[in-house]
Each structure stands twice: as C-alpha cells, then as structure tokens.
Image (cartoon, rainbow, N blue to C red):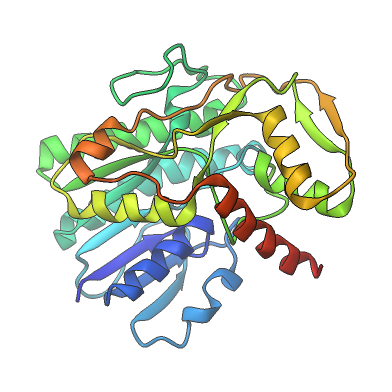
Length: 312
C-alpha cells in the first residue's frame, strides 16, 4: 500500500484519481480549497478508512503528517471562466503551490507528478502538438495567467528534478470530459450539453472551424497512472488525437440530445487556440497507452450524468 497526496482532489480530474488509487489499494489524502472543486465529487469516499480530506489552499504552507510515497498536483482553476475570474489565485497555485509541494516531496522523499496542460502550447504553429514544441503563448493576454502558471510549474518541477534529484513526472493534459464536470465551467462540452438539454441556442465562438480533441476521463486517468509508475521524467502528452471542429461537435451534441436547439455564433475570445490535437507517440512508446473509449460512448455516459444533475 502506497500513501498518495492528491491536490485538487475534490475537482473533476482529482476526484477520479482518488477513485483510481483507492481502487488500486492505496491510501489517499485529498487536499482542496474548494474554490472550483466540490465535496459532492468525493462524498462516496468519505467513509473509506483509507481516504482522508484536508480543506487547504496549497498556495500556503503545506503540511501532511506521516509518510508520503506519491504527490499528484492537480490543484488549479482549469477552465477559462474560472481562471479569468481568479487570475491571481491561478498564478499562485501554479507557482507558490507547486513550490510548496515540491518542497514537501523533497522532505518526504516522494515522487511528484504535476498536471500540466496542452495550453503550454498556446495557439500552436505546429500541428499536431508534440512535446518538443515550445509553444506560442501570449504571456500578458487573458489566458496568460493559466498558460504561464503551467509553464512555470513545468520549469520549477524540472529544476527540482535536475538540482535536487527529485523523482518527478509531467503530464500535459489535453481536453478531457466525463462525469463530474461542472455544467457552468465554460468549456465547450458542458456548455453545449447544458444548452442543448435546456433547449437554449448553442453558442459557438468564431465560425466554429477551430478544432479540439476530447479524451474520456477514464482513459486520461489510466495514462496518468502509467506515467506516475514509469521512470520517465520528461513531459508526456495524454489526450485523444481524434480531432473535430467545434461546429461539428456542437452538431454532434444536437444529434445526441435530440434537441431542436440552433447554433448561434459569437465573437472568438482573444488568444483562443485555433487547433488542438495531441501527438501521443511518446505515450504509446513509453507508457504503452492509447485511449480506448470512443467519443460516442463517452458522450453518452457524460450526457446521462448531466441529465441526472439537471433532474431530467
């Protein structure tokens, strides 16, 4: 049995990781300040003797009594609607929070995995994006608070790896979806589904030609778990390379939900990426990982979750 600290443990991805480590027979300590996470996501774990929860902001000093084998840093606002509303907190959790947790990992002699993002590539000039691409990011644009927090997080993590010999792992996460997403988090999938289920017009930004690639959460968690247990310290893309335009995706949601909602087009937000598709060659070769859940299957599961949340 390993003892694992998961920051952002009450969030969408963090709660699924808590489930996975409990299922694997490990002890899990979840930590979250609940500014975007919800205790509802981990309520089913509260009675488990191998699960505990700390209500804490990792941007402040972090103390966890006892041994730790692994630290997974998933604390951060992750959707534009959140990090545009909380720019300072977003920068602090990526910088101060990462520094605090790397220090904790050093003291505990724990292996640390950080949740980086495809947003480190910015609005990419390379397609698909591989890990050797340095990115095209506007540091002072509205999205810079998230993009640069994650880029700094990677740099700090690699510095601890090279200078202190700390065991570290870096996962670059592409668009992920599934149960426990928030309907109001501003990202395309919950926004489209929420609007469709309510019969509202579906809002597409720009002309809808910009592309995204959507990975089901169980596939993502599998990739993260394999990366943590690997001996590879450089960044690894984890995502689904099945690419679709947002206009096509909105039409897919209309078909799936059976709604009569129509598309409505609004101005594209500043610095919104035009293309997003992971090159997962490294994950295939090093982790023997590829996504298994196709979009039709994953969307149906996610739709059922949202229907339940809305009482439909």
